[in-house]
Image 1 (cartoon, rainbow over the protein chains, first blue to last red):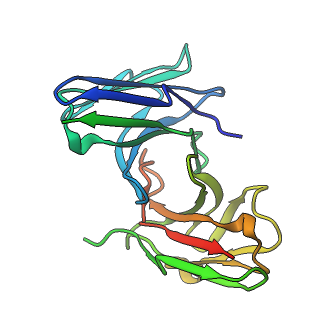
Image 2 (spheres, rainbow over the protein chains, first blue to last red):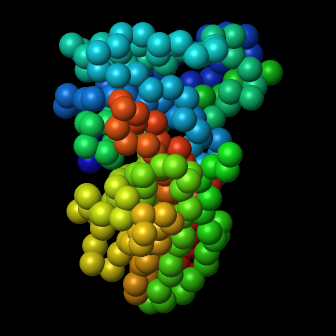
Length: 110
Length: 115
């Protein structure tokens, strides 16, 4: 069974708008990672946030982590058509493997 | 700096045949992972290695599946007596253990179609 659940399952926005995706998980974690996957391609690592961190930034990406609520969010600011992809969160327990959710499909309309 | 590579990229096989996939991780990475992904789902963990030791296997990995990582470099994933339910994208990832690292870097995947 999957640990993380992304919400919403699908999101459609206009270019230039911000996109927010959420991830909830069930058990305690060591870290949480966000990945992007373009249709039929491999996953691209976006950002990793550790359990003792609350917020991280990378370019137009902002990730927050609330361990008390067992949730994380990924914000993409000033979205572009090229951001169209599926976005996955993956939780790591520190033992090696990551457990993925089923993703949010983001469509950015030009 | 080359990323994770996988071979072949696509494989079509008939039910009952055996298939083998190869993954070459990023050279300095000591951890290597195999995942399986079906359409509309996130990747599901299959197994991972630290160096040449296979440290964890998912219950998804039936006895028809075997993975090896001889010498702690490349890895192979073999599926024996393939079934139509094995059709999926098989993803390999690698990472550097320790020092608080955890980022996994994925290869492009091998798409398996069992007819």
